[in-house]
Amino acid sequence: MSSNQNILVSVVVPCYNQAQYLDEALQSVLDQIYTNWECIIVNDDSPDHTEAIAKAWVEKDQRFSYLKQDNKGLSGARNFGISYAKGEYILPLDADDRIGVDYIDLAIKAFKEDAALKVVYSNAEKFGLENKTWNLRPFSLFNLAKSNVIFCSAVFKKEDWERVGGYDEHMRGGLEDWEFWIHILKFGGEVFKIDKVCFFYRIKENSMIKDIAVDDKMELYRYVSVKHADFFVNQLGSFKEFMSQGLKENDELKVLVNSKKNALRVLLKPVTRFFKF
Image 1 (spheres, rainbow, N blue to C red):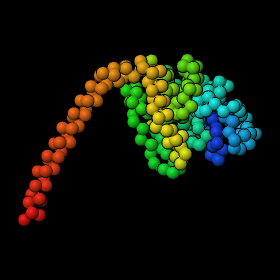
Image 2: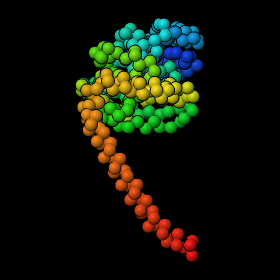
Image 3: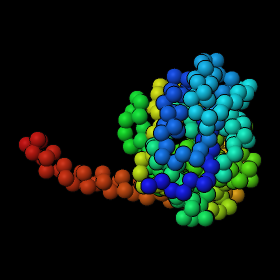
Image 4: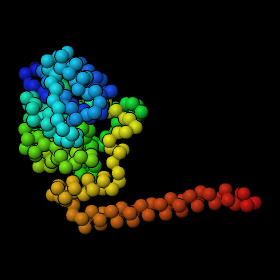
């Protein structure tokens, strides 16, 4: 049974050169058992036939709407769409991914049950070139400080997006989701993970995260580290503490490796003697 559907949820779907997958993403929105949603398709000046597909969906169901802007990257496209959103809650959905039929329903139920929640996400699966469970590490601020542990299509409140100024449009090269989660969560708020697969992440040859050059990725890490230095210090300690912990773990690893080597020598000694004989 669906939850009380008096809350409007805005699904924002940016699209740039993903027209071939867009129908599948939008169909997953249309299939939701929670029906009080709007879906804003944002054409980020895509050179393919995104516009034709988007307009067909607008004709099919009045809950779909279409926007177009000059190319500003993923963060800019999301921000543009969310700025027009009328919903209390936001669900970003990349044009090549899908959501399960009860994702919005379960997310809204979770928000209603816990007023302290800021982010709701779910178990996830990869599909496309890979078909397997996506084993994200459990959420904690400490784990979030080390790397992103929440996929891009989590549900959050529009007021939190407004509070932090939206997605950082300086991060056109990637990692914008990680920075956004840090920004809205670092001063408090709970996170809930639905114990069901409700998100499907497409793996393809030109996945954005794989296309980030090493130097560009390091620059993005530096940018986030400076912007949220307070968060990283709170979760990981000072630079000196972090380095000391790393050196300690390195020493412990050396001891472990040496002990394993010694154990291996003891085990292999009789075998070596046999072959010598």
